[in-house]
Length: 228
Image (cartoon, rainbow, N blue to C red; front, side, top):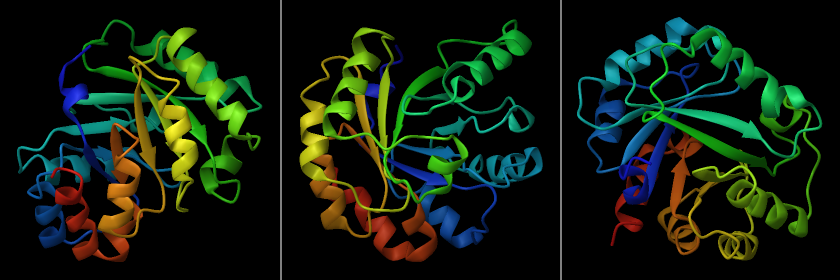
């Protein structure tokens, strides 16, 4: 496993389907965040991904493509995140799309750059939850998914994705107790530095996304809040 994964406390997630001003992007890239994920649910195109990648590449921050569809896969990123949605009701989102991508690109893949994420989507109103045909898990389910991510699939990352709403810190704490080697990522609804600190007490890495577009100043404060 690449050791940088162990050192990541904070990541910004930018949506290639959303506009971000050059000044704001510069501030994000130079904020001290450990990496930037390029990814989204709707409207992710190769042109959008390439445009955002070229702008981020003006800076030195590590850049990750979270693969949303086959059409937007491109070389040029430092790392690639491959989601496996664990609470989906359709095998497509857990295995079939991944199988298709590997079948097509296996000769080009450098697995030192690839991280497979065990995704658990926990906001039933979110686009991601609906698109991937998820079922809402209870707390015991989520803990079991985390246990499976580490002990059955040996995944490097288990991602609790609340997708636009703020999650339950107590559940994040319980899930953390299930994991020894798999890293716990938390994303969703972080609106200020205090929520960032609260989730970082339990998660190895927090992901800040929507706040970048809603309030850039508050978003930037989340970086140092989790690095003290």
